[in-house]
Length: 280
Length: 274
Image (cartoon, each protein chain N blue to C red):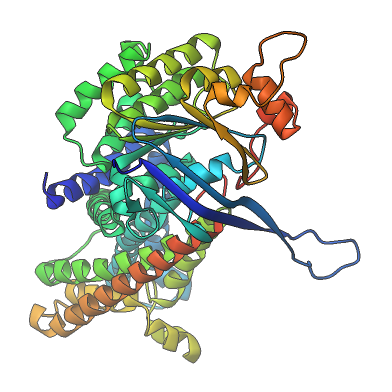
């Protein structure tokens, strides 16, 4: 049996929030601690080559899951393994296999795309000349114009910056790609470019993709299986077609992924599209 | 690809990134250079005017060189300290911290790259300031032991690399105020290490703290080389002491950094906005 790309077993993650507000008349601030359960003993397995979607409303724990797999967070209990390597105890082996594209295209904003991507390439130990060729190829494939490659990123639109972020994610040829709302805030054209590229990579590079998104159509079209997560728990996990059978159709219309999401989570679509809260 | 080649490429990533930061923030760099230069000049002019201030005859040339050595050495050491302590702060400001911490680069490699840049940058910057300041004052270094001074400076750099690592922990622990806290650490070192005055002028309790600052020995040793022409052999025990203490501080710094990085990952403090 092939080793799964990702195994998540009984993972729990709790954040402690401190409220330091001082009431009128109080000399000293009282620190109130509040526990926020981001993930509550979740289990899931992603097979090699699969595009696995995670849908969930605002603060449901999607980004926490991605950060745990990325070695940026440590679980309070449970374990995560990437191609058999434990994320907590063997993080370097995991780091060599993964890369991540997040909703915020985090870059050195005064650097050009080439400078930013070269920084990433060197961090991953890539040889400079071949990395330079590869980054140009990926950026052009994503529809970025060559004349923008040497300009500061701060002069680029949000969509263009996100495409550079996608290029950075693919540059190191990860076999597990973590896409954390990669198309949020993009115009329809840019969104399509990114989605087409994800499909292409999956078909040509034997890559596994873990995708979180608020775009129900995107999840429906790209994912082999989808987990719906709410308040840190997986409330449904199946293929898009399988999930749609859970919700009866209304007025004879075909059930959409949005119907499934709204029925199972009880959250409105607008809530789901809202910005992620800290830590979740 | 061998692990060594991969780690060296990783280390070079930080050198190249910092060079790019200088290129892209050249205006900021120019302002900072002017500030450092005028600071060094102002302090040295205090020495030049000491006779006029006190109304007594003093060896102005000696006082000027004394202050200038302090100003330049502090300039160099503080550049190393800030360059290393800001290795996390820069990533926080730009929002790239998660990407750097996610990359398969060990923290010692991260440190090697940052240190190589810091030493090179510190030397170039200090030489530029020295060249300009030399046009304002007559410096007599004819009796100086320059080779001994280089040894002393390199030995002192090791300790400041270690102090920089310890200070780099602050932005990791305190996302909003950590970078400012490193300024307080640098200011305390400046106060107690005899940069502009002998530490004997400090109160007894501060002198005891000064004895624990590596900068105290570097600056004292540099003055002994440049002002008194002290032989390299005489300075060797101090050089070895500085290297030994520096290695110990680096080792302690790396252990603390590792512990704090783990804590930050447990508490979720690596996130971009903190």
